[in-house]
Length: 209
Image (cartoon, rainbow, N blue to C red; front, side, top):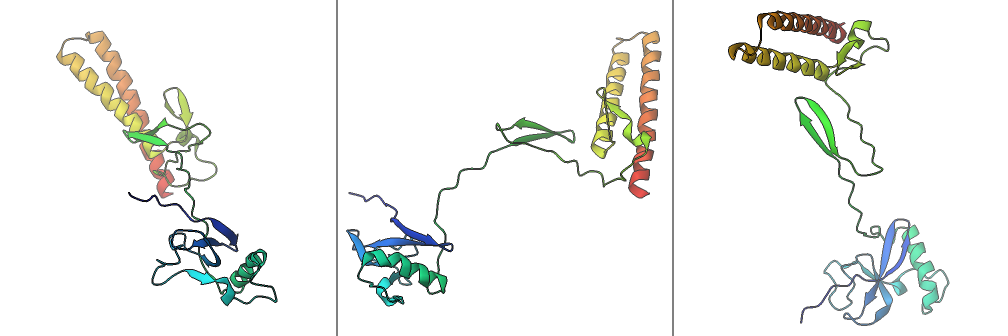
C-alpha cells in the first residue's frame, strides 16, 4: 500500500528560520531532534547532508535541556547567533490574479479583469513631452474624444482613413455611389488626410525638438 506524505509539524519560526519536529522512523515525535528542512524529518532515513540537529548539542544557556519547555529558547538563541540557518516556512502562495489584454491594430484592450484589480495600460510609443505640449498636439480627435497625440492614436487615425478610402474605392467599382456623393466623400477624406499630415509633422516636432 502506498504511503501519503504528511508535512512535519512546525516547531517554531525565528528570524526567518523555520524549525520542524523530527520523527523516529515515521513514528513518534523525536524528543531532542529537530530539522530546518521539512523534507528531512525522519531520524532513520535522514539525508546525507542532513538539516537535522540535536538540541543537546547547542549552548543550553544554563537551562535544563532535558525539559522540553526550554527547547524553544535554546533553539531561538542558536538561530540568533548563526548556529542554525534555514528557510522561511514553505506555504502554498495564492495564485496571482490574471488579467487578459488583447492587442489589435496597435491598441490594447482589457478583456478580462478580476474584481478589485486595477489595470493601467501605459502607451510607451511616445517619449515624455514637456509639461505644456503644443495645442495642436492635444487636439487630435478620435471617436469624439480629444487627448494627447501618440503614435498609437495617430496610427489608429490613419488606419481609419485607409479603411474609408478602401470602402470608397469598392463603392466606386460596384457603382454604389453617385457622383454627388463621391465628391463629398473625397472632400471629407482630403480634410482627414490634411489633418493627419499636420499631426505627423507636429508629433515629429515633439520627438525631435
